[in-house]
Length: 415
Length: 148
Ligand SMILES: Cc1ncc(COP(=O)(O)O)c(C=O)c1O
Image 1 (cartoon, helix red, strand yellow):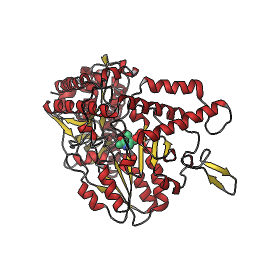
Image 2: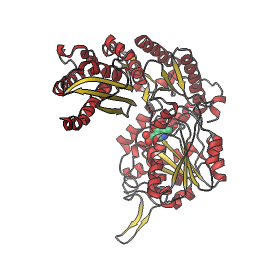
Image 3: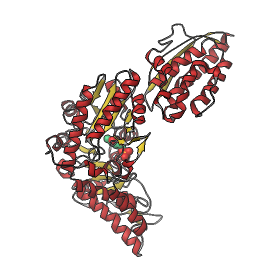
Image 4: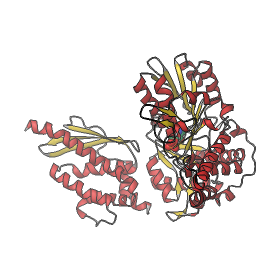
């Protein structure tokens, strides 16, 4: 992610990209839709919709189960998607790519299958103060189950993880460090390479929550050096209900299955069950096959746009929007890290984020308001909520202008 | 969807200058309300004379709809007894949840909340104070009855 600020300008044609997203063509409350809630979920390009439709109309059957033609084709499509995901994050092997429902399920899998059997009293899990609830609650559950302790590295007023403080919290009892690659509430890009290095030198493993990172710049899990990496398809313009947990093969190999059922077994008798190989050991039950197909199409699509050029485009929009909001009276930007993804959280004096959300919606501008599933971040800044605009591949300068105009409208209403 | 219908002048005024705002010393009952989804929090304090609310104040942080609704509520219920408040709440509920509900003249200034019904996502903002008031009334039930 360090590439984002330094990325070359490139000529990214967001107007053309827009035409790939039919949902953007509509009016909302009588105005053209300006979709700025990409951190919550991205929209799907035609390429994804068509890939899913083609799968559903030509290929669908259950996977890994039949000798008939469709079952073969569906299995090929599903396993092809796994290979696509492997390439997308540069994992060594498809055995390291576990399909899950999304980031949340990926983190829970690690908590329950890696954490629960081997953690106990005296062990520590280290997270940061900017985590999404999905990277807090599963660890609290493991702590309750095993008696291990959850440690939290602080953030500063800019919304950056205090690295020195985090390094001080690392010690021989630390078994796992779980941090976001990019914060959804603040946009902070976390220097995860340095965290991985420090954690490994203490003998701790590292899980990265990549939910907000994958759609904004190329991800290379081997270069990052992390042990686990979790992300969701719907944040990178793919379907909901599908995501990936990457885990280093040696680790996944040692971990017990976390759910039992079909797919994950090799042989079953009432006396003894043997488990399937990686990654199927972790995929009990019929998977989300069309979701995986759609996710693979989304990865193709993103790479066809060029992730470096896309990152540069988003950084331009972020810089424009930041500059424009700084000029508006009464706006305070929450999250001013030196390295940010295209996420802009803010408050407006005299206008609660909820009211802001309603006014902006009336102008066709979709943003997110609330605590963004990061209540501790809100507590840290002593605010109940923020308004958050987040940019994606189809956003343009005109969208930034619409956001600013809608904020001026809110100022007009609330004086 | 008309913004002006939601953010009527009365609402904006009560948001900017909430009435009966701040803790009530010597209260007989109080309750805290919280809407975890949007972070709104408020506390309602009551002082009774018999079955009647002699004084009511509130304090909290919330959006314009929740603040104005609480402010308007305090004005509307002061001096009323529990039965009257219950009846008022039922009518408010219709106002907030049924679009195009016939204007109910007896609601007085509370009628300014009529635009909320067009914004389903905002109904909870307007009802938080009423739920909190109900909780305070329930807490007080024991205290009041032991005194009688
Ligand atoms: C940083 C971060 N982690 C985890 C999640 C959870 O993702 P999902 O709901 O797709 O499982 C999100 C999504 O909001 C997120 O932004």
